[in-house]
Amino acid sequence: MRPRVIHRLPGRIRVHIPALKKVDDRFQEIVSVLLKGFTLPEHFNQVKITYATGSILVTYKHDKISERQIMNWVFDVKNIAESILMKFIDTDNEKISNKSIKLISYLEKASREGQIIDKKFRIPDEIWS
Image (cartoon, rainbow, N blue to C red; front, side, top):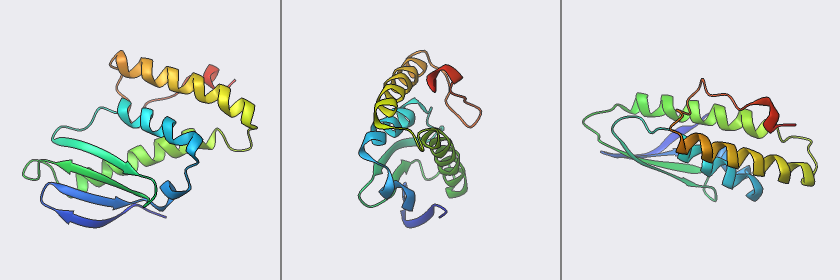
């Protein structure tokens, strides 16, 4: 299902992403690290994920950025996260643990080094081996 706005106020928008409810606990840390690595677009203040409700809350400067720009960013992040999590499909728990550790370490390093994690960002193949 597509992300959709479920609540909005000037400077706040809550977007429902049903797939978030299905994110296994093991992968929530990966998604959190990935999100931290994203350079928030200019005029975003904060992004908060709530897995229990399947939503994200974005606070922003309402006079500087449009809802459409926010939703474009949400779609980009969602698509990147889905492509990463798909790499774990049909992987046994031991390999998931090893890949998760490598991935989190790589994402944290990329973030510290200032790499911009956007829709062009690619995870190196050695992370998945």
